Length: 266
Length: 294
Image 1 (cartoon, each protein chain N blue to C red):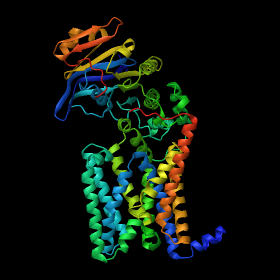
Image 2 (cartoon, rainbow over the protein chains, first blue to last red):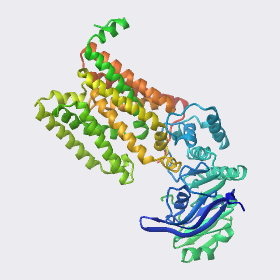
Image 3 (tube, chains in turn cyan, orange):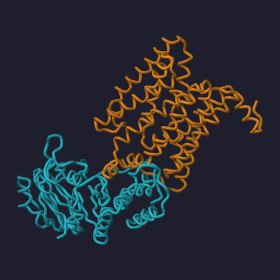
Image 4 (cartoon, each protein chain N blue to C red):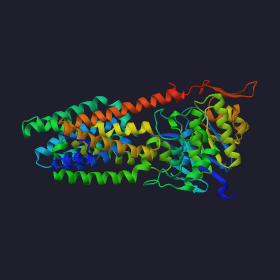
């Protein structure tokens, strides 16, 4: 396989933050075009995994590559949706301006009118189905609408990998469904590799090619059936954990480490 | 007395050298304050602007005391304060304004101390209250040729800097996490903008004084952002409003013999109230009441 087919490769990677090891000995490979769910308890270092891929958090050991290149900030091939609360309702900038910033917001000087850039922004907004409200101030949009705009912003630079940190958090069930369908469609039709940090695997479980589970300073990865099992997770946590399947097919992880956590207070 | 003949009125306005200086300096300051003000409002940094203007007060007094231009003293003190805030908030890893909120007692003490220091400096110099008055409320009608030159230099440098950093600054303001991932140096931009803001504050104090600084550095940007959410238009509109307040304020003050600061602040306030009112009415009419969940 060509090195470029490897969307992301961690090799014995470790991250240390404030003298504390977040995780270590992480070796995993993500194949291009896959839909990958990053799961695990709060504070286990799921977001740190994305930040290492973005080059925001440096490794203390090992290496990490994206599309065969060492990671670096500002890589146009990588789009990012950080974990966030909603935009301030009083933020007075149009949704379309926010998408445009994803294209050339990092450049110095005054943005000149550019037909090709304008069309690229409009195409991305159409792709995520946000044309109807793209001219409105972003603060006035609903959570689901803001999420669509942010996906357009993340993709507009030509990203082939999309990293999303809890994008379904704080959305209602309808919007969770709509946004995860949208991400799934982008993965399938545009061939974009998706790395999605989730608190709850169930809304995205039907789409997931691969699961990366972070807990206890270590990481295991594989298909959902391989990873989300009582034996695998008990070994990873180093403590008894039980994986239950409810009658409607939902997966619930029960154990001392995550007592049925469904809060959004992280 | 003014007539309705505009040309004659303008000739009347500009017949004295001090009025010519006032208009030139006022125009330069209005353009800079209007441009910086857009970013101040977008970033929610009006408190930082207020704080810098107060820290500048002893600077102005020191300038008078040392027989250099008071504007030079203002610039020196504002710049030092801006770098101080920038570095302190950078070290603690918090945004400037989050830093302010959690340390409001400390900031309050520093502000009071700096005003007290200014009071002392003025006392040492002349023992009169006239100098203090002009720095609290503006001294536009007494601007020297040298101050006009200094204002021109400061406005040119600051506007040039805003042209260069404007776009990434908007990115870093509305979406700092994504901007950082895209390679934007968010902290450096934050400090760079504080420096520009310090320069803008220092020259704006000449026109409206320490206490009325909001009229030119916040109100035009706030009104402009109510009227449009397009960054380019809002920035241009903020400059236009700032210019209009300054020119009209100077003219009204000249013909009525009432303080310039009063007219500029009144125009700024009235515009903001009207704009908010019109916006609220439009929102009600369109039935799109903004519901903000807790």
